Image (cartoon, rainbow, N blue to C red; front, top):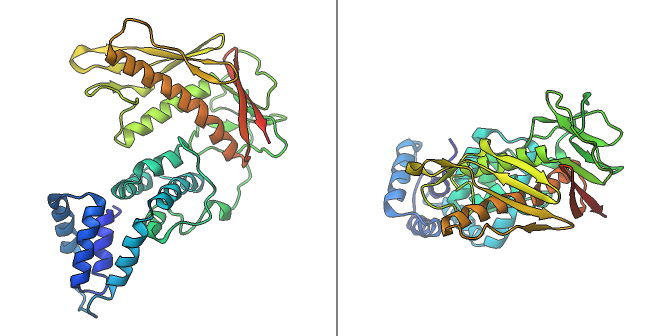
Length: 349
């Protein structure tokens, strides 16, 4: 299991086999910076010290300078926030196991950067190609495996195309389909354009429109389920502002299109009050507009409605970015529209 940020600080402070007075003071500073209570610190400190090497003391606090530099690096919050997001995006390209994700999120969350790391992994916010990171985040880079390989040094593997219907199409001369680690059930298929289809050979029911970027609502649904499930794994509520005690079930999500509207419903567990399936919808016509909640419903129902609507918006904003970054295109999506269950965008160079 990866160390916590405070355990990393302990390792630096004791790196020479001794803890100096300055080192002890800096550990107090680190405790405050991480927001640890005395009880939380005591648990981590006792566990770490019990496993500490019994090597003979070599000096009197040479590790202080390393710890001091690390603490100073942690003060640069703006740079750390951006870097954590970029590192999350890079880790997705390199390949991120469940264990590495759990360890990395635990460490980043201890630094107050858990949400930034997660938003980079799932592209809920913009993330840039990774060229490096602050020294203060070296432990996180090691956990993510970025020290060994970063995206620009990963050898590209030839993509195997299979026969099948296309559910995602990118019409761009520089786009080449490849396997998607964040949606492995979507696989590259034989097509005159860059395209993916569902593993298992699902068939499309309507002809995709002729646009720069086209994807079926079934892909949006899969992305929504994944977004909500990942929020659960991060210990967050599946929906924004979901009332306490309520729980959403991502696998129950259903998506319907009706003209220019896209409607999402999902089962919500109300605890002692049973299960319900609320819904929300957005209008897609050049831009995304949330349709208002029905009149007369209570405040908690409005929160659930708005949370569902925000999930649709987040999915429609992040999925195209995810697809374009997967094929290495640095371009913007504009003029979103929907036609018979297909969402389309124009690409802006």
